Image 1 (cartoon, rainbow, N blue to C red):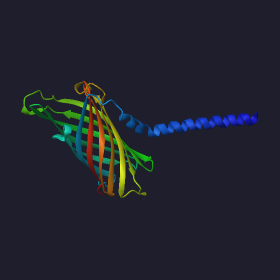
Image 2 (cartoon, rainbow, N blue to C red):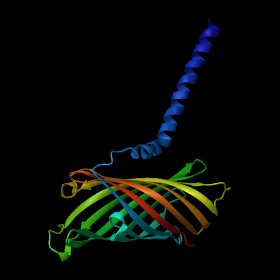
Image 3 (cartoon, rainbow, N blue to C red):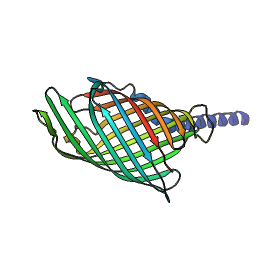
Image 4 (cartoon, helix red, strand yellow):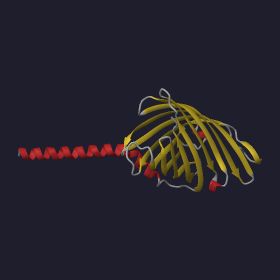
Length: 265
């Protein structure tokens, strides 16, 4: 009987240990489960194709202080014209190897083209962010929490007649995660091919009634292949599935993107 009680106790312990390990694995990889699920979100009534080009620079760092700069250009539907461009700059502070903070400014120019009508709208953003990273699958998983104060200006009609978008103010929270997986290379990863997986969700905090009327704004799921030329330069090309919640419908965008990452000393 004592032997049976011991076996039963050990079996129960193994079962509990297995469940605890499953919970830990689920929590550890939950963000990627959510990313995969995002592929199967309802596309909505609008589906378009676009092209984006981006350049990101982080550094150089001096005494834990560094710069962030990025510039992006995005096409309209079917890449027929430029839809928007963005310039963003910020000051970063590394707290340690896993945590960093940043504060900055961004300017966004957006163009709207319809039948016989063309307008553009400026947007100024103040942003703050916390970046946390930790080891995963032999690489590093990044988590970025960014808060944006958005000052969206009056739309300006440049061609034809119509009603331009009004000025408004809102705040938005963005959660971004990215995992870069080297392909067939040893540590430290300083040169060679890689695969990048990332996802970013956007949530309206204030001013949503003047935007789409919802807390949920959009989600960007992205997969890319790239090459690390050296420790200062990465180049990648990938596909993004962007899901936008509009006021009365959904928009589903297929986006092909080319990105360059610079890390000056």
